[in-house]
Image (cartoon, rainbow, N blue to C red; front, side, top):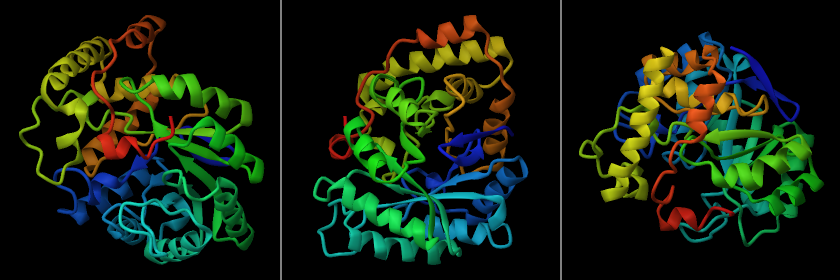
Length: 326
């Protein structure tokens, strides 16, 4: 597996998102043994970049990663996130990146992860009630104390990114980016990140599984699955978006790869400062996704992918959209 740099942080070119192992997707938190095997297999394949958050579960996803990394901590670049859970008394659903909350959150994450440092610590969503300078100032103190190695932001807009980076170097920004979620990242985020030498981490690089071509119906989603109310997975939007998946599948057949590998290879072709984090809880899927590192798309194939019709429907429900800086 090739390595790239997110700022000054070396990570595998393809990472592993852990959320579906414990939270938000059908079947989460049902087979920790398979999830741990998946993490171990990823490490064997050279995937060093592992992504979790305190809110996944909450808490149990970090605990799971901590168990998986016992005796293997030095093989992994651990990224986790704070700010969607308040430890300072803010009511449920209110973001909290206040200095006091960060101090409490980081200690909990360190304990659950079974480590004394976090490689990349993200603000999960921008807190409108705490100046970004106060948030990053506290994170910079954690860097000085050795509890955090690098600082990241998630779903932050250009103004926030620039202000944050002026306080302390930001290593990475995480936002949704894939063949069906391009406009915001390409128009507003990536140009600034390249100006400032900040890496980019696309989450949901497979469109929450849609771009794999494996989802032909939502009938198998249980009530805990966040996709059940996602606008792109409902009604006529779903039927329209299936046509995008079909086009990717046809191109995959031509290229001798799977749709997931094509979607990831397209992302990798966008630059050597991009490290997508496809999520899975299965060994076979992590093997498939990791193999995308060896897929080389032709100029003609890239052009076809660049010209796919846009997806229909918002990427999040209304509550989720309110937490994104656009």
